[in-house]
Amino acid sequence: MPEPSFLARERTVAEPGYNRWLVPPAALAVHLCIGQAYSLSVFSLPMSRLLGVTDPAPGDWPMTTTVWMFNLAFAALGASAFIWGKWLERVGPRRAMFVAALCFASGFFIAAAGISLHRLPLLYAGFVVYGVGLGLGYISPVSTLIKWFPDRPGMATGMAIMGFGGGALIGAPLAQNLMDHFKTASSVGVAPTFVTMGILYFLFMTFGVVTVRVPPPDYCPERYSPPTSTEKLVTTANVTADEAIKTRQFWLLWAVLCLNVTAGIGVLSQASPMIQEMFQGRVNAGAAAGFVGFISIFNLLGRFFWSSVSDYLGRKATYTVYFALGTALYCLVPTLGRLGSITFFVGAFGIIFTMYGGGFATIPAYLRDIFGVLQVGAIHGRLLTAWSVAAIVGPTLLTYLRQYQVAHGVAKTEAYTATMYIMAGLLVVGLVCNTLVTAVDERRHVKG
Amino acid sequence: MAENPPKKSSIAALVFAWAFALSPLLWGVFQTLKKAAALFR
Image (cartoon, rainbow over all chains, first blue to last red):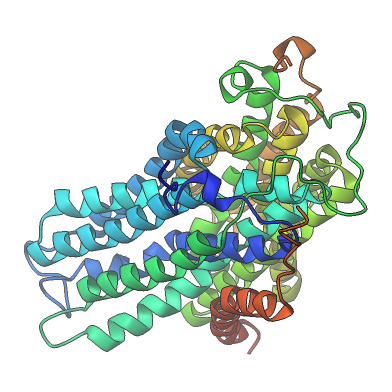
């Protein structure tokens, strides 16, 4: 009988004595790469002058056109996580991570070809393939980590998802340095930057592919005794992905994620102009970029901090904190703006963004608690459609509300007041949805 | 499993894996902090 392929699940089963702490770096390697997606906006300006180089020329793609590469990538993320979640559970994390790395890198190469040939459909096709890499890469280590860390599922998945938050911190300066290196009098250097990033990211993700291991079927960490009976909201049973999406609990958690992300991503998309307009004359473009970097670091830290805290507080209580504290802080922001306190304003958003990141990082463990570990990766994949929706609704809502306020004579310094109250309102709805989450009916459980 | 005794992953492998995964992140955080400092100048 031939030996199974290196990518096969059977070849990834850990040998006795394997140290489970080697698995989170494998997951981090993948998430740090795909998190680059958050920094795609760094290409917006250079890509609007691919032909003109110094200024946009006739035939150059406007930013309203290139912004679709971002939208397509995130739509493909949600779709691929939804479609291939069950395949991923079947074939194991190594093959899924490898396909994710291939798609992610190929997406860069196809997009680079699109730029070199100046073919927009090719550019878009590249970002669809890139988005498939995002979706598969995002969910591939989740169920593996949960199985390795049944005693700390929140912390374990938080470590990986923290990487996604950190990806932008690496991707933005890396892209900027590469474009500075490759630019010439006749090129802005985006295409060779894409090719270089594709190669670098593929190699880095390969580290995760090679090192990832799944635990043996009967694995149990030392000094951990699995719960013998179903605790409130932490099940020992399993629900399949197909069955999960028929439950009220799935859609409540979908709403919980969507509302938490909508509020945060809306602010994130407008953070730079918002702080400049609320503190006119005191915060310039450079300092506003610093503000964006600052909240990105808090987003990163929150992913690890809150998901780890959720192992002690419980998932439902942790989301209650996100929504209750988030509501209070969003309501406080206009007052802090009026008081002119940049430090408190930045501090409030720092805390808000720890909870934005925490919302992403805690959801896989919440799903495990409610639906069991059997197909948690696939269920997580299906829930990520909430993120795709929020990524469109959040920024649109915030931009539209601001424009509406300004058009109706509201001063720019005050234009975000109503917006912040509406964001707080979204979080109140999220709080209600979270409160309604209960255990899944036993009839939905996998028998036997 | 007597003929296949448990193989302990070495501390070196753990240190390498974590250093490899975290070093680009620390570089990114440092780059971002340099930019974020402009906010409080």
